[in-house]
Amino acid sequence: MDDKLFTYDPKVLSMLKENKVNELLTQQLYNYRDKVDDASFHFLIGMCWLKKGMYHEAFIAFDKAQSLIGSKSHKGEIFKALTLYYAQKDQEAQTILGNIPLKELSVYEKLAFMSLSNSYGMDCDELLEDVLNAEYPSEADKIVMSVFAFVYSRHGNKANALALKLKPQMFKNIESYLNTISELYKIRMRHFTIKKLTESVCKASTLETLSPKEFMLLLKLISATNLNELVIYTQLETAIKRKVNSGKAQLPWLDVYTQFWSIALSLAESIPDEQWKKNIMGKIKKSKYKNEQALLILVTEEMKNVSKGKANIPSLKKRIEKLISFDQHNVKYRKIYADLAILLGKHEAADEIAKATITMRKTEETAEYELLRAFYNFYGHSLCMFHDKEGHIQAFNDLDEKFDGEKCPWCFNSGYTPIIKTIGFAHSPANIFTEGTVEKKRIEVDEQTLKKMVDWVPMNVPSPLLNRYLHMLGAYMSPHEYPDVLVSGQTYIFIQLKTEAYKRLAQEGYSLSQIDPVWVASNSAKSARKELQIFSKEDKEIPADVYPITAKDLVVDVIHVVNKN
Image (cartoon, rainbow, N blue to C red; front, side, top):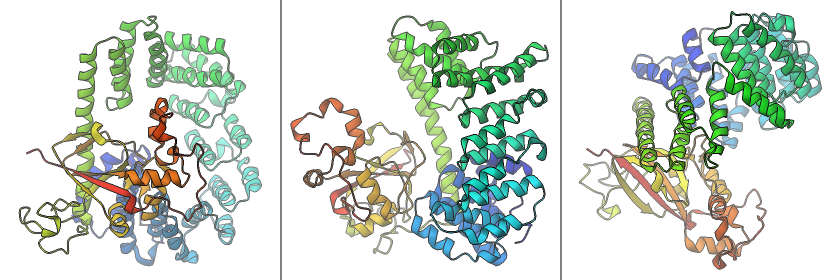
């Protein structure tokens, strides 16, 4: 492998680590024409989209990188397989893995290969010795790599025994040690192992040396790994109090102090110990500095008292406003503010908050779409599936007679495959706000056409029956929430089941929760209606190769937003 490949500026690596991928894409993407033959550039673009949960774009960029690398490295192939894994395209991922020449991989590529192979239950013992016997920069690196290799080759006892040999002093700093523990937790190391490794930092002599940043990292690790051990919390409290009472504690240590009590609250709730929880809430309220998490705890607790008439409304409003100031783009915080206005009967104020939130989301979504549009402008748009029909790519008013004098129901005569926001199901998209004019086409398609429409497209489809069918056709479950806004250029696919399909599925013994669980959850009072009694009360078991829903059962709405100007 060429060591010069995939070497990046520390600032770039820091932005990736902090998940500032939108900012990174904005900085890097428009350099495409200057770096069209730079494999490292395309790999970085792929990493950004992968972290954003946009898997088709990630795959395209990784594929471009690998085409430029050639035989120098197989890192692009491994990350293509990883992207396919996240996109739930398991057969394609395993095909790529099966074609990678193992002898040509670097030790780090071998470990990545083992990780993916393990996810698919594939045997990777042949690579274990290579990883164990390789040379590493330090003893800590050797142990960590060996632990991961043992886990991926399913030697759990050896992995845990070896991990216990790790000590803080083996690492260049405490931050590296804590990050390593965090990664070990993610691969499901035993709770005992994680606890012992963390306890080595919780000694009084070590805690005394920690910086506020390191202490905060330790607190977040304890919270993330569910180390609800009272003795650990006692040691932490003693160390933090010593820092706060020393007179040297300014904002950083006050932040740590508040964070500690926020995390301790979780321990009090898990025991549960109501009196301790009450005492902790009192400490959080009295704290001189309240960070984001502490404010969210106080606001959530106080909102419960509003309807009871026991809340201090002026204080609550200030706290919500302060909470929003921490994260202006957090829709949930804004919703809390709107909920308070509604509870107080101030509906106009609630509407104003809602409108401001929608405006903010449109601005964010426009920026998101511009990145996607720029990506495809550089990497290439695919032609509309109907592009070979005569007249399809001519001027917008020179329409294809195939569509009865109307625009193409897929690309609306742009000539290219649309950029799809998501696939939705069953419930009206009326609550999705749009910036511009909406064009909508309702069509029925065969399975081949539907596959072209949904392949590599993210979906927010809670229906288990429809989800499995769309997944078989190539769609993947989106890691993003159901969309709340659409902006100019975006397209949204909205799928509905035909009435006769509901009746057929009921006759075949399927429950309504297998067809439309969202409706069931939001309409529990209507479950006794006579027309719903045809559905089974119990979920029907479905063999892996059976797809109760097919394209002929569906109606597809293609909703496209065009510029209002």
